[in-house]
Image (tube, rainbow, N blue to C red; front, side, top):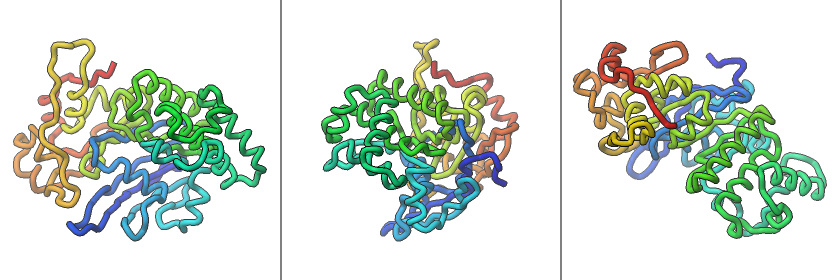
Amino acid sequence: MANSSALLSVQNLSVEFTTEDGIVHAVSNLSYEVSAGKTLAIVGESGSGKSVSSLAIMGLLGKSKAKVTGDVLFEERNLVGTDPEQMRLLRGREIAMIFQDPLSALHPFYRIGAQLVEAVQVHNQVQENQALERARTMLERVGIPSVDRVLKAYPHELSGGMRQRVMIAMALINDPKVLIADEPTTALDVTVQAQILQLLKDLQAEFNTAIVLITHDLGVVADMADEVVVMYGGSAVEHASARELFYQPQMPYTWGLLDSIPKVQSLDDRLEPIPGTPPSLINVPTGCVFAPRCKYASTVGERCLTEFPELLDVSDGHQARCHLSAQQRKILRPGKSGDVS
C-alpha cells in the first residue's frame, strides 16, 4: 500500500531486456517511497540495477527494448505505461534527473545558454530573454562564477565540476518536485564533490525537493540520505533508515559493503573486500542471488541455494532479504557497525 504522503512511490518495479543471449532481469520487484524534502539513497555495485530503475521511472527506456512492469506513482499518477508525450511534459518539470556523465548528457553542438533556454521554454510559454534570465539566475544559484562566459561556452570548454553544476542547474531550472541524481559526484575530486553535495542539500532545503540519490559511495550516503535501499543482482536486499543501516545492518551483502570502507579510527585494520563478482542478470542464481559470494551461506545450508529469500521486516521500518535468523545475525556480527567518518 503506497504512503499517501509520498511524492514518488515505486511498487514492484521490474525491468527486463530481451537480448540474443537471453532475457536480462535488470530490476526485479523494486519498491520504495520518498517524500518532499527527504533523500532516499540507492546503493550497490555496478550492474545491480540502480541506474536502470531510475531510467524506467523517467520513461527513458524504449518500449521496443525494455519490458517495464509494476507501478511508479507520482502524486498518485501511475507513470508506467504513460503516453510518451505526457511523460515528455512531465519529465524535466515535475521529475528531473542529473545524469551520471554531464559531458555526454549535455549536447556538444550547442552553447550552455541555448540548452538552458530550451529547458525553460519546453515547459513554459516565455520569451527567450525571460528564459535566459532564468538560466542566468540558476547558474548563479549553483555557484558558477562568470555566468555570462559560461552561458556562451560549449560543454567541452568547462571543467567536470562546472559541467556538473550546469547539469544541476538544468535539472532544477523548472523547480521539479522530485530530483533523481545518478552518481552526481562521479569522477570529481573530493573538494568539488563536497561542494556539489552541499549544493544539493542547500537547494533541497530551499525548494523542499524529494531526492533519489543513486551512488556506490557510502560516505555520500552517510552525508545525504534519510533512507537507504541496498540493491544486489537487480533486487533490493535491504531497506532501512540511514542510521540503522550503518549501525545495525542485517544482510551479509550490506556487511560486505560496510567492511570495504576504510576505518579512520583503526588504520591498522585490513579492508575486507567481498569475494567474487556480481551475478549475470541473464543467468541469475537460483535461491539467494548473493549466496555464491556469501561466506555465511553454509550457516543456513541448502536453503540459500534453492529458495529465494523474501524481503522481510527485521524491525520497524527496516527490511532485509536473508535466510539467516535474527539470532544468527547477532552471533555472526556482534556489535559491528559502519564507520564512514
